[in-house]
Length: 240
View 1 (cartoon, one colour):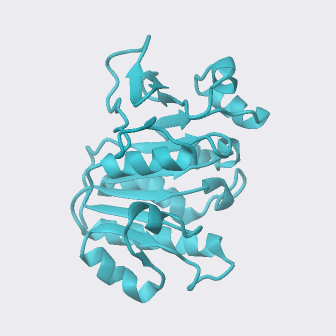
View 2 (cartoon, rainbow, N blue to C red):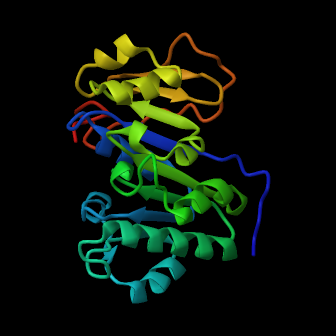
View 3 (cartoon, helix red, strand yellow):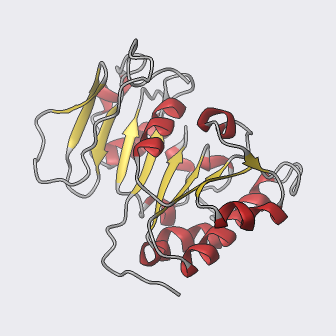
């Protein structure tokens, strides 16, 4: 078992209404991160194509794919048909057990987290990944249209939130409770987003090809510019 108690936890939530750019930002952030393993739960069958890597569709192939390092994109449709939440529990357990035994930084990623856990019931395996995963250098990237519906024990582990435009009152309340300005969130234009480091209060605003710091503390770690589109022809944050 490998443990590293001084690993700085980094867990990111990307939120916003549909069609505002969440998934494209998620893709750019995860691509930019340096990690020996990037575990992606792909219950909607979307990310294998986006990341241009083959998906793993059965349990037997997971170990082989993990052994090779790099991207491990798991689609539970074959192993858990119609039961994505069960597949998610399995994948959380698999990632945690695997990451306990290997050195190096790992990412745990999934889309629409509110569909897999809610404010009343969070899978114990996910809480283990979030709460104890830091010892084994596991960081997280999550997408959710409704952050208020994610279990509080998971939300408390978040270090950074990116929000696109939100109009739902409950989602906005969560953002305001975490230091976002309601008017700014409601009035974001398409493709615009605000990033807040929940530890330091550092805020960054989307502008054109990236995020630029404005009126913020300069002491916050991991303020990260979003790389430009590979085509070089548009905003860094594109619509989902």
